[in-house]
Image 1 (spheres, rainbow, N blue to C red):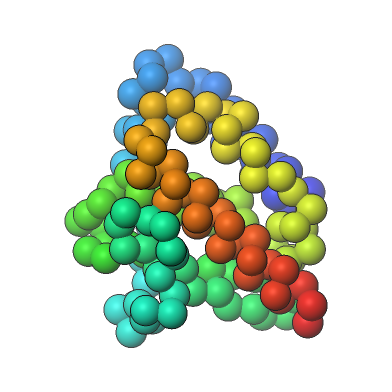
Image 2: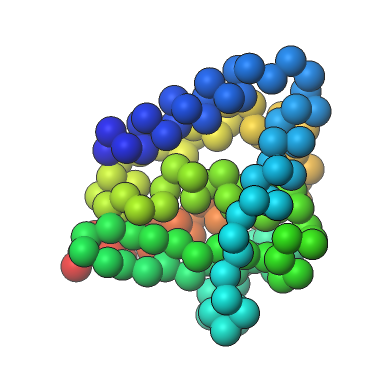
Length: 144
């Protein structure tokens, strides 16, 4: 779990450094553009995150006790950037850790850093759905 906590602390430090409220949106846009996306062949209906306004895909991969996620939105880096940036931010915390570590952390972290402030209701619901899906996959793979 220390990986998740150190990742959260790093992101919290980044968010605390923002001087302007728009800085967090610029940061999410940058994450969106830097995110490698995923192969188009993985973008199957069964991997759509339900509840997102944008079509977002989240594909789990379980290797050697760790959970890895492939995430992208329809249109990739071209659109929609904020939703894709939110997904990339979540993966910065939850990618490459054990399912049990994911389940032992509280997703409330994102509200604690102020991410919910200024987020449209549609994006807030979509992000909550993404987190719910990550935790669902962690529950499934923790049983293995």
